[in-house]
Amino acid sequence: MQIGSSQSYPSSSLYVYADPVKRALESYVEKCGHSASQLEPIINCAIDETIESNPDLDKTLSPRILRERIESKSKVYIDGVLSKAKSWRSCREHIKAFSSVFLVGAGFSYASDMPLSNILKAILDFCRVTGWDELRNDSKRFLEFKRRFKEICDRKSPSNGYKLVIANFPKHIYEIICLNWDDLFEKAAKSINVPINKQNEDRPATSERYLWKFHGDVEDIREENIRGQGGWVLPDENGFVFNSFREYVDRTRLGEQLFTFVIIGYDEGEDVIYQQITSLFEQDRPTYRIGLDLKNLHKDKYIVGTAEFILNKILPISSIDAS
Amino acid sequence: MASPIAEIVTELAAQNPRMTSEQITETIISSLESEPVISDAISNIQVPSGSQIELAKLRSKRLPKEKRTKALERIENANFFKRLQLMYIVPTQDSDLKKGIHRDGARVGFTFPIESSGGSYPRLTATRRFHIDKTYERIQTAKDTPKQYLHGETTEEISTQNTKENKESSSNMLQEVEEEFEISKDFLSLNHIYQIIKIMEISPDQADVLNKIFDILDIDIRKRNRTYRINCIDELYRGDDSLPEELRVSKPSRSNISDGIYESLKAVILHEYKRLHNQYGQQFINGQITYDNYIQTTNRYSVYADRLFSELPF
Image (cartoon, rainbow over all chains, first blue to last red; front, side):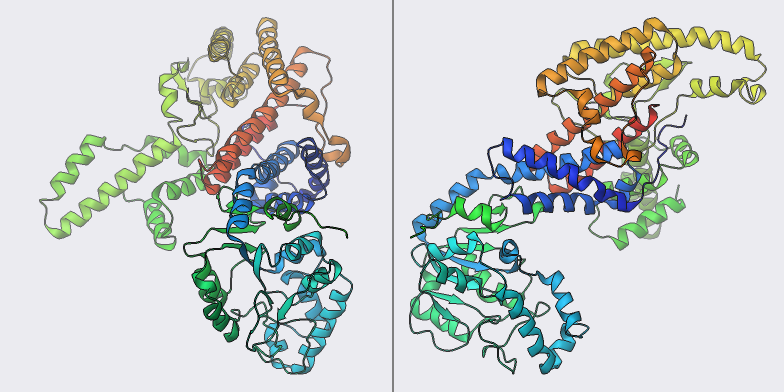
């Protein structure tokens, strides 16, 4: 018998293992004293990442080794997430001590079932446009796109993560910079009766402590798409920051204050946001990133986990007062 | 020395400036591993020793520019083949320290990295194919093509001689596994499993050998069950009911001892793979190794484990 001979298995069979592995991991998470439902996105992400990471290798592995590989690797991710207690504590202490500024990206809306950029293509198709370029150049279709997106938002409720951020605003979170079009923060604020100042267009910010929406707002849909005047910034663009925000930072001396900078659910792919916000705020300040990029599991200041799961570990107000 | 492989290396390096020379060599090895002819050719290439290379480097300094460039190219090629041989042929630095398995006058190379005392793997060699023992190949093929392999000896002579040799060598190999297993007070490694599989191939019907193997595996499985509070045999079949039939682990007939051994071997392979994966996973989580390192290492272990696993019948 020739040792080392390998058989090729159909690639579609890889997902056959997802369910049994998921059940095993859920049971493992519960045994560790955590809620499997809160960690479900992490479990899914870990399994997907494992299955997608090396399909060529996986196709050659025998079923039992393959299943063990998927399960072991996913479990390492879960272990990594759960072993971050020290980072959670440190982030919480930093927020308590210095308060914070939150920069929120699309990943934060995942738990509220909002479509992420890979799913948005279906809305483009529905509006009969082939891509972001075509949408940008066709104001009629762009308007239709916005309305469709609003219809989706109207059916969504804010997750507990949104409510927790609002509950900590403005005492422990000075500013919320939201790069999403949706109105989940606004809905969360309404649901727990917290008034918020919202800045969704580029006009002078005369008060303090804002929810900033540089990239557009589903509550303010306009026919013309002009940046800074209610216009939406699309996922293939480089981001946008209001001039009034820069003036606000100067006026309030936010740029000179010590606070904890928290970036959550944001892939940091937009140059403008990096240059005008991230690089400025993370310099010399405690900065934490929260997301699902499992490759960063070993980094101290990268907290892997869903917003739902992590926020009540790191925010000083970690539960919502029902009254 | 300047062979097409060396040209491929240069091209790879030019196309992937971020690849280290080790990564390039690994890439080449992975592509060559399915070609035994090439592996044999590489093992036969005469490479100058380290001191000869150093001397050539010194001498090259005195040469005129054009000749020096050529000399340096040759030195680079020699270095490359040296690295290639080390990665392809010599399994681990520790394997030299371990007792080799000598049979038919030839050293049987370990194909798995042997864990060092500190629990680390000095070099990973397992992306390469297994070295099939030449004696074994000869025995297997002797009946069909005696002249080609036996050089004048009769089939009966060589069979009798080899049966004796096999008995001796399988006992020796087994004794070695047993000793290492007892000394290490650890679990059986994938390397041990490989040796046991070889013993099973050589002596499929020697009751005393099989009994001893069964005992060793039984002790190992008990140790694992106790340490990790799991039943390794149950683990082997866990979750199979939720998988399509063709993906389930087939069960042994339990009609004879070797089937029981094969089942235990599968359970041990699976658990050892899981244990190693977890060990490297923890190192990644603790920041001791990089993500890439973790992925590469565990990918290799899945390949080793899979190769062993698919060697076993039923």
